[in-house]
Length: 304
Image (tube, rainbow, N blue to C red):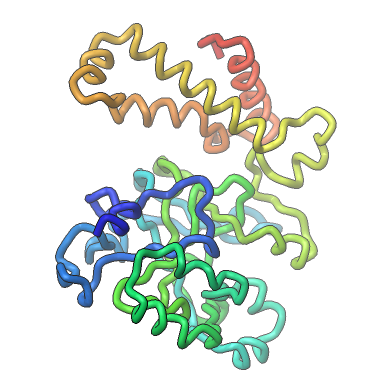
């Protein structure tokens, strides 16, 4: 039970850390085979999926095609949508051709056999999972799928795709679910990272439009900060703003003394400040705003 609590915070949301990726994390929830018979809060409840959030499919441009945006505010860690499609084995997938391979997701990798060693599971359960190790399964959304197929690639995504298992820990039986990796405001487009090899294999440059876009950074490589530099400065500025609000706001100071944490609405406000990519401005204006924020971080000033 203690191990499962490392995934869930008690209200159906999942703890998503910045290092979580599709192939290094398997989210395990309590199911019918658990002592609690799946009645505890360490799992995705029936109200989590289909999610209660509202979405809209829209056309971004002729080059990009369709995208998906949320019409609801989505808290961090919530299950947003399950990635659905036809479940195919290796032979059936190879007959589909290159286009299907570009958009399909393989539920396991031969190089990740150590993933079960990270889980505090009984030996018999691990053996059962390993028994089906080479039965590779793909999820192909090109012919049959759901709204998740319209979610675009983003270099700084607000979603992360993780595998989720309850009663069956075999990776080829896991569900691929997109979780919110940060608070998402209503009206924002949804993105997740297709993987480092996707753009090079597909043969075109990214057009996600975020200030961290790889194609943008290549054009500005001499002067444009890297993703790691931006994140480091953003975290420092986040801490500075947090201290400033606590210092000058009596309610924030009282709440901190009573609970030991910062008021959630202030945390959400600070994240909005830092998530510049959701500002509805053209890319040049958005980049100018971003650089103003970075300059404010350097000068440790609140005037930005």
